[in-house]
Image (cartoon, rainbow, N blue to C red; front, side, top):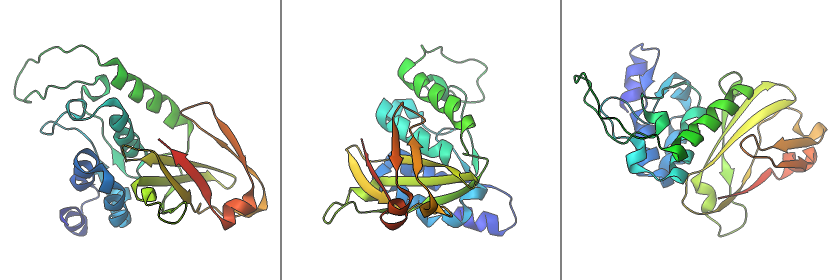
Length: 216
């Protein structure tokens, strides 16, 4: 694709419009699009909006907007947020104009970005080593695992963050095989950074079966 061609010519980074388009127009296939480009994700410039793209808040309701924003901000590589995106602006103003129409702040969208930008600096996202995790079927005939985008970030041997994004408009389930050294040697406490839930998990079970996920 065009991104790989640019990187092959010596560019340090390349816009990842393929991923952006998938997140906005075909979220059911976005996880697969990301996996196909795993080799150059860290050299990608990831975005949902820019000066000549559609406004996300004009396209997506808050729930799918949250999923797309979480995916964007937890991918390895360079991540861009455009002027007005965090406030949920819906009008795309041509950059050559010296004025713009004022819009009220979309509080639902603003709360999404406020929370993500508060939590992510406290995590390993953007600091540790990133790995894509392949979601596996939770049980036979359940195909909802295909809608998951899973990114594991690890900055310390006994500490990691797993970004879990369900890109489907329905509840989904899967098992995540965590690529963590010495996973089976002790138990783990999983903490939902965007919520207030905690789960204790046995390391040997995580090693043998994976982490079970059931998310909206």
